Length: 168
Image (cartoon, rainbow, N blue to C red):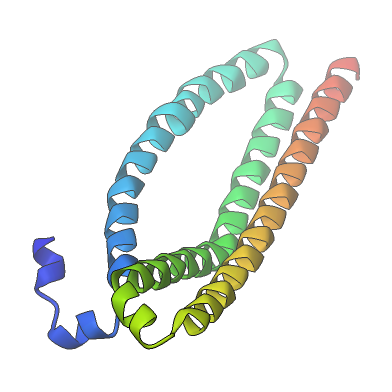
C-alpha cells in the first residue's frame, strides 16, 4: 500500500477504487500462485524427466531420443503458446479489474445514484462491462481448451512414437 499511496491525486481520480483494490489483491495472490506452480508443477518435472530420459537411454538409445525430441518440441510449443496467450490474459485481467471497479464505485456512490435517478445508467454501464468480461472469459476458456487438446495430442504422439521405437 505504501507504493500505491505514492501515486498522484490524478491517478486516483482516473482509476476506480474497486479496480485498484482488485489489482493489489491480484498481485498479492499471484506470488502465491507462482510459488505453487513452481513447487507442485515444475519441480516434479525437473526431477522426474532427467530420470525418465536416463532410463530410456539406458534401455535403448532410440527410446531416449524419441522422448527427448518430444520433450524439446513440447517445451518449445508451450513457451510459444504461453507467450502468444499472454495478451489475452492481460486483457482479461484488465476487464476483470474494470468490472470490479464499476461495481465497487456504484455501491460506494449509491446515495448519489439514488438521489439523481441514476440506476439505469449504472445498470447499463455495469451490464456493458460485464458483457465484455463474459466475452473475454469465453475466449480465454476456448483458447485454454485448444491448448489442452494440443497437449493431449502431443502426449498421444510420444506414446505412439515410443511404441513404434520399441517394436522396431
